[in-house]
Length: 122
Length: 145
Image 1 (cartoon, each protein chain N blue to C red):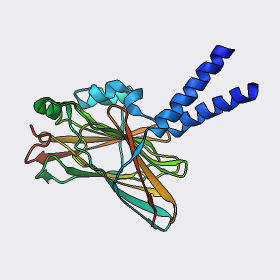
Image 2: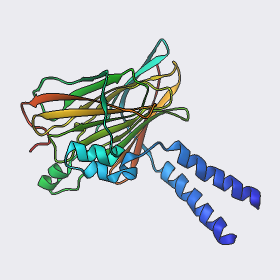
Image 3: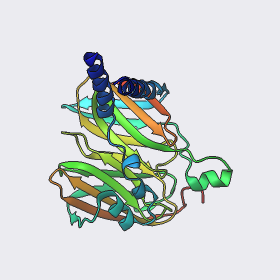
Image 4: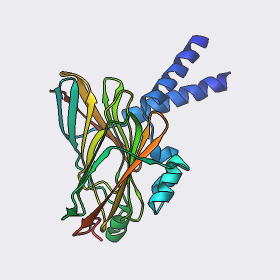
């Protein structure tokens, strides 16, 4: 029983640690509502180094592997991405939402580090 | 004692449900596949997608292969949308999960090493698959060689 508890506690701790890991960064976010539909544009500064490019430069590949957008606790955009997104990726998407809510964009790098930015929907 | 346990379980469960599907972790083979059919097979299994109204847009001739604007829009109630191409060493580019009641309207910029074909697959909420293809020329390769 005690062991189980410990395991659970460690799992919970790990989970919270993983969530707290996200660092706030600057992103260009535009989100505008019209007739209940929010159109969002997000630009992330990231060099999106592919395996080939990294090999040439003699550094490790590093690219965004996952992008999620949430409003409150609802996921409105979710993409698993590969290294073939352009450098400084620009993404556009639409979802049903309303003015005044806060949109949060989180991206995960290849090694698991997370970064996020927030913006109010106009 | 039991209550704390339950609480902890709830916390753990919540964290799990908050994170959306990570197709990199779930289907690792799809991301290392070198050609489009293999990647599609790794991601969705054996499927025979039907042609459908999927608006896939990209320039006919891309001057800069490092940033090709690609947009995709469909009225099909979609569960997932995937984009592949056959110009780069690996085929998969992106897999979107369309949230419930969401809108399948995406645009992004991708890299392509040389001229090739972009394939989009839409997995409908009805469990059927739809696809469309688009060939384009790349004047200057992306990926910097």
